[in-house]
Length: 303
Length: 318
Image (cartoon, rainbow over all chains, first blue to last red):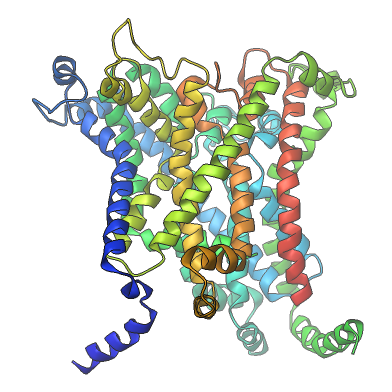
């Protein structure tokens, strides 16, 4: 009871909206609802179309009430396009890429934020700038490089970085490290310096200081980055499109380009395929929304 | 006391602490530090900056990529003069990138900012609205390309079905008509960009000191004046980030047009031209690199001032 009153008392002065006349609040709500409806339309339309059999839309037209709704398009997309195979490809790329990106960038962030080396600032600038480059500015030499860099046959059946999972993972790690280093070093700078010093004075090694003191404290930033980076890497279209030639080896987002030909006459099937491919990131977003927002905010509030 | 002396005094105070910290390190510790910094840096430099420099070097050469490195032939500025004079898709592509930037900067960004301002208060359904507006950001641009198709396909698309223009006589070929197809993809690029900008500004607005607003209101400013004269200038750091992100997004644009029609027929972009020169049939390494360098120079024009501003301030503070 008293807590409730206290909460109200605290809430009152800051709630600016309470001072507004009711009329303008109604206008605001109406405007937001309308905008939200427009915003959801593309996704809603994709889902609606995907649930209607082709025959139903052919007979009644696309903009019509449904005669039949079923999941047949999903079953067809799943099997005809061999989606499980492409999800597996994505997993092979995203898993290692995510772990390595976070691990390597937390190394760099740890050193930069804890030890006063002269090149720290330069390094941080190089990493950050590298991540901001459009991918096409480096693709031509990278493509050539990948065609000459060898890999053992048991890692890549092409015997090269080109057309291999290792190659795609490597460029994701190299590229995404820029953003993660930037975010993590900003975050680690907020952890008191005394913690590292105390650990070192107590005789802990550098590695132990990193692994048992700093890395656990950076967990909130790591969680936010993991969510964000999963989405970035999952959603990559370009790297795997250019660096993986064999269609059946591509992760699911890049594989959309080969699936397109398979689906092209039937919008209902396209819709079902698109929904299925989008599903993992959307579910992750719905479950961990705050991590997404925090990740992006951490990346932008520096400056 | 002059700033020079202040700095001397500060470093004199700071130095022993630093020395002490470094002297605590064993040889093994130093090795670990070197590896923790060295391995990631090497990977990043090797796969990002080496190719970036490679683009610059190769842009002054002719090479079809077939022979070894010895067959690379230096040709000076010829690739650039060719691009500017006798390569038809270049100027349209550049124009499309500029239009792309214009739409993101002058339509999507202000809309995102506006939504952030509306949501930066206690209203019912705040979380719901925020989730809805941010949703497109988690979709890949390739998927959004499919959604463009669901909307603008000639016979099966939503738009033509609503307009009743699906018959041979009155059919509107949205994606097959230059101009119309650019409008269609930009509509969806903006759909995504708006949510991104909204989230950035929501955090920007939270960082503005409330007493600034209060003071302005007490001084008799109306809501518009408070925003334009007080809140917006106070968000300067976020404004810079948003500007850089928007420029980079406009230069990176690729997936959407590539899914829709491989970036042809009115949807050419510089990124697409670069890609066509390496995965197309005729592999023109030098020429493609020159196009990439044009993209690189424009990008660095945005990136370098931003980093300078961000990290220079940091160095001053340290």
